[in-house]
Each structure stands twice: as C-alpha cells, then as structure tokens.
Length: 206
Image (cartoon, rainbow, N blue to C red; front, side):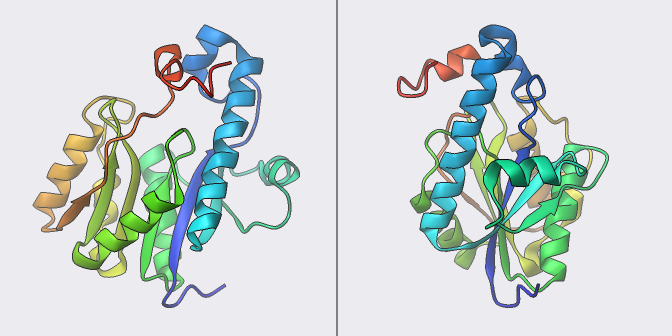
C-alpha cells in the first residue's frame, strides 16, 4: 500500500505472551498482572494514535506471531512484522520500509507510556515541519518516540546503540548532530519498566 504524501506512526509492540512482556516488571508483580497492564497500555497507545487522525501500522514482534496479535487486536488494523537481529535493526528496517513506500514523515513509538496522547503525536508532527528529526526522551535515559522526515532519515542512527541503558537518548542526540540533522525535542515522559515506575500512576497500579 502506497504511503505517498502520508504521515505514518509505527506502533512497536510485542505479542501478548505471558512471561515475555515487561520482564523486569513481571519479576516484581508477576506475569499475569504484567500482561494485563501491558495490554491496557497498548490499547491506550492505539486509542491516542487513532484520535490523532494519522495513518499507522502495528509493528509486531516476534515476526511469526501475527495471528496471535491479530486475534488480540482485531482485523481492522494494518500489521507489519518487525525484522532484524536487534531492536535498533528492527526500528531502522521498519522506518526504511515505510519511507520506501512513499511516507514523507514517520514516527515510531513504544507502548509503555501512560501519558501518551493524540496531542503528543500532533506535537511531534509539528516539530518535523522545522526539523529533520524529533525525539521524545524518557526519564530513564531512553526515548519513547523517535521520528524523521523522509529526507532526514539515517538508518545509521540505530547502529551501535547500547539499548536498555541510560545513554540511549544522549547517544542518539549526538549521532543526530554528527549526521547534521536538526532535532526537535518532545516533553520527557515516564515509561513503565519497574514497580517504582508503575507506582507513579495510581490509575494503572495493579
């Protein structure tokens, strides 16, 4: 399907397999509660994307779990498998794929951000009017969203990154500078990785 002149959001998520999602949190509250919370956060993310009015793709992992994801979320979405040996490669490949199909702007977002909203996506798109890239930092040193204009996308930004560390955001910003890309910065948000993170959100605490 062509994405010419389109703005697209890539929603990165895992298949809802008990014991395979949010494993750090699961060690603290158990697999059942973690899976229930994960599903709630995914639905919240999808609702925000849909409210923004932007085109989107559900990018699922593992790549052979489409049936499981589709049974969970339903047939009324467009699905795209994540492909690559690590997170960075999978992110870079997904963005390359939609730009190759004609997208002019693309955002990639995770599914563990309780404060996600349609306005955050609209703000990100607005920042791409004046910048080559946009990034939303998280309090743990990573980022919750990254996006590019087609002519500013560089897959090299996703190589040699120590994923899961507190240097992901800072190293990505440095890579953008070295590549000569102007970068808009979104508000810093908290993602849910630990019980301490979860306890910051009373309405989600399980």
